[in-house]
Image (cartoon, rainbow, N blue to C red; front, side, top):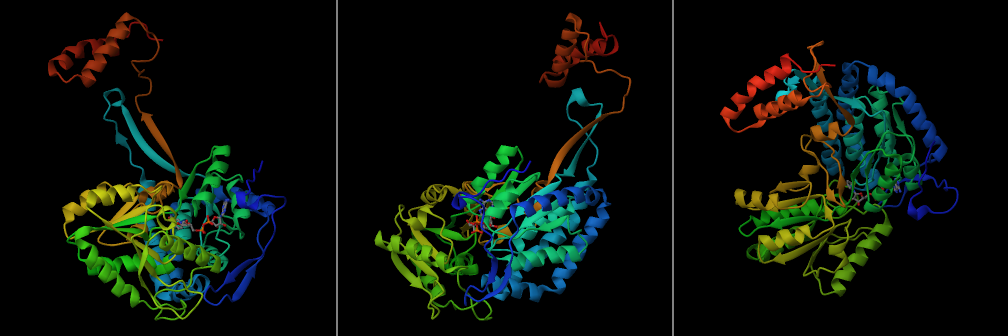
Length: 530
Ligand code: NAD
């Protein structure tokens, strides 16, 4: 039975079928429209995926790896076209789309080409437990079956690939719902995977908004991978809980960056400006709260001011633009409200980039932002940076960890030991030292959050394992030789078990040696074997 949970914002009767549009954010030009799926079509896509999945999983692993290799080749060959399409739908500069989206997806595919066969090997091994010394053990991984992948718009190519590639390579079928703000990128991903050799029903696509996302999360899938906002993530988790199926949630963030005294502030300012303002600041792992130790504060503010005032704003299609428009005008209004709220509460604007385009929210640096300001309490999803002076690293760590989010963080220092010690104290999923954003793209490194930033991983062997069920196998090759602890209990049996525990776990060698005779008696001459 299909269980559909509409998102809270969409309460009411039948979901509306508003067309899904590909729109260029910096001009507002709509250049493609899609008819969204209906909830019934979602159910049908899941059923078709269910029917197609066993044959896909039964293929030799080489067939799935061939599709992955072919996908890598196709993406590489068509990289400019892909980057231009992403840029057109999101307004991120083409160079950024090429590096952070196409490049990361290519890295993922290459990583998986090695990781999938490595995980599939599942070698036999021995147990360290004396009780199980006879056993040969093996840990295998099996596809879940049908996975739902629900993606956001901010990195529409790389975030979708980070879920789809390991899911498909490990033998699952997928029903993929891209964001309603980036439907053309979603469609292109499906086409590339089908062209690479993945059967259409194994790589199904449903277009639509949150209503369709909710229909998919509530359908008869085996696991849901959701990337997006906390509110929608919570409703996905509740839909999964009601069916007792697992989910992986990559949610929002209000990441901290900590600049320690003695850091190279020019380097930190250059990196943090890129981290905060690239993709027009719409990055889950962007450094949204920058804590600067007293000794570095003045130099950092001077450096970040210099960098920000030199940024070029303009449409992503212009190769000299650093920062384009946020994806929809209503998101700009939220940013303006967050900025104005901070200023009304006493914050000052240290720097803004210049812009002649009214649709572009200019990169802005706020100082002296009080803790109760919206810009510190909420996720700011746009080019708004807050810089906060702190006494020392202890205060920086305490304030960084005071957030309800815990996605990633960065630490900037010339002192590797000090930076490492600070990184270890941060309550989040990943930490970059003297760099930013990178932890979300490195193929070997699991990316994921703690607290309201979600749970589960993308990337790394952990991200691959998240697409599979784990099965433990214990094989006993002494068929016909009964286990000593099977039925037929007696006082002698109890003494034998006690002696066995002493033999296995006593710290005293003499006690272990003394136990051997009783253990052998239990093994060789059971008092009451059944
Ligand atoms: P969103 O939650 O509005 O939408 C994300 C996706 O979920 C879309 O496809 C949308 O249609 C769908 N959706 C919306 N409501 C749903 C519901 N009730 N049930 C099922 N699906 C639903 O988020 P967004 O605006 O697209 O993305 C921005 C948010 O995503 C930010 O908070 C950002 O931090 C977060 N994000 C997190 C990561 C990460 O790795 N942790 C990566 C990118 C973005």
